Amino acid sequence: MQSRPQNLLITGASSGVGFETALHLAEHPENRVFALARSEQRLQDLRTRSNGRISTLVFDLTKDKAAGLVTWLNESGVEALHGLVHNAGFLVNRSFADITEAELELSYRTNLMAPFRITQALLGHLRAANGAHVLHISSVGGVQGSVKFPGLSAYSSSKGALSVLTECLACELEQDNIRVNCLALGAVQTEMLNQAFPGYTAPMGPEEMAKCVAWMLCEGHRYFNGKILPASISTP
Picture (cartoon, one colour):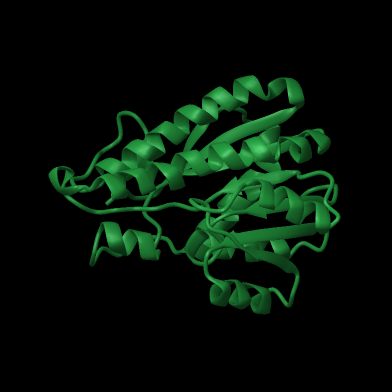
């Protein structure tokens, strides 16, 4: 997949695309993969499936301090971070009129503020890689001009903000040889899709989409910077 050893970190690795992406990245012996999620049980599943090749940390993006990630990486002997995937997301499917302040805040804290703060905290490690790649995982619902759906105003608008953040960071971090891109995923058969569109069957499973995410993380920055790229066969 790549010509040099890489230290790679992914958030939201407990299920779906994040879980499968971590496993796919760990298939390559030159990679050291670090995975975050809130569920210790699911992280244990990830370690078991990878035969212990994935290092995990129970971490709540909305509550835990990003400085804890710096300490964890340092204690793991990681000086340079070559790839960072902001995959974790929060979705609420509720009428605009009924979305609570707490749900709106959690949407933005998870989908926008966590990537902002984690990237900020890990800048030293990303700079040390001399060619790092930050990859945001968004949604086609967060792309301007795409089809929108009732009930997803908080989710889609927070993902739209993540797309703009991608463009801002690509510009600002270019001087540090850090590239920043965004994959806007379409319908993938995950728990989140079931929550957004109950009963809908997606044309693709997380295992297949994980291959796309892994390639984009490790190779895509050779070709793209500051791009919001739809990865979608179907949008419900």
